[in-house]
Amino acid sequence: MIEVAGLTKHYGSRTAVFDLTFTVRPGKVTGFLGPNGAGKSTTMRMILGLDRPTRGTATVAGRRCADFPDPLREVGALLDAGAIHGGRTARNHLLQLAQGNRVPAARVEEVLSLVGLAGAAKHRVKGFSLGMRQRLGIAAALLGDPPVLILDEPVNGLDPEGIHWIRQLLRGLAQEGRTVLVSSHLMSEMALSADHLVVIGKGRLLADMPMAEFVERHSRQAVHVATPRPAELHALLERADLAYEVVESAPDQGVFEVRDAGAATVGDLAATAGVPLHQLFTQRASLEDAYLTLTADSTEFRTGAGAQPTGGGA
Image 1 (cartoon, rainbow, N blue to C red):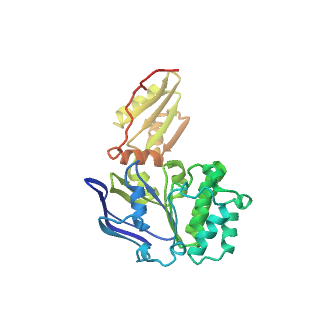
Image 2: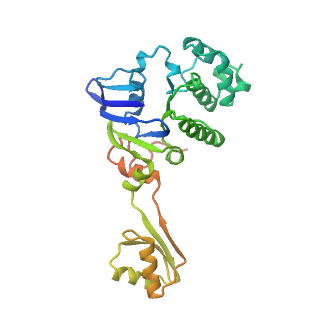
């Protein structure tokens, strides 16, 4: 397990992380979410022992990462895919890491093949695309076959095939019983990959719960209804004192979103009055909706509504 307890980091008068406490358990993919500047990267660096906390602790399997004699065999991490010497080949980069962590050289070829870089093993990293660098960074994280993975934006720069591949990889690693902590700003991808979420904002913990519970708790659901007799449905909803919103209105077609009643209630109400329905389903909020609702007050960089760019045009 990754255990974070009371973790705090100050940079002078600025607080990057404050009193964070959470646990990342094995056997599941835990998504680590938060707006830009929320403290995610700082937290990951403290877990890995790259930054010293002002106070609090961060341990992996009950030990500090700084105390591991061969860290790559305990924790695999990807924080910055660009932090690789451009003059080295992909194979030599991994060989150097393997030698420093008592990893057999044969493992280098295994991970190069696993991430799809076997054909580029002898190519210098400076010629790699961003997506190729991401794959090489993931290869380095997997090099020591560690029980714990910490990945910061692993899908950045990957094409759709690569995104699908990393999703399957993460879920497969979790199913093997490994501990997987992954951050991403792609909410649609997190919705497909993560089982559990840890969300922070302005350095503080906002949520720590299973994905399904998070979406249900931090978003509203609505019943979507379409009818060719909107005036009659409108009157029914009014008499039943149900909150609703008219999404589409025309004399021969109306679409409503009913917010405080289930699909069965709305369907029974319409059936009793003989009002035909062409659509009736529960419209569930997405992870993105729930995330934006929760972090609305924790976003440091916010665009202005209707703001226009300044300066000369082309």
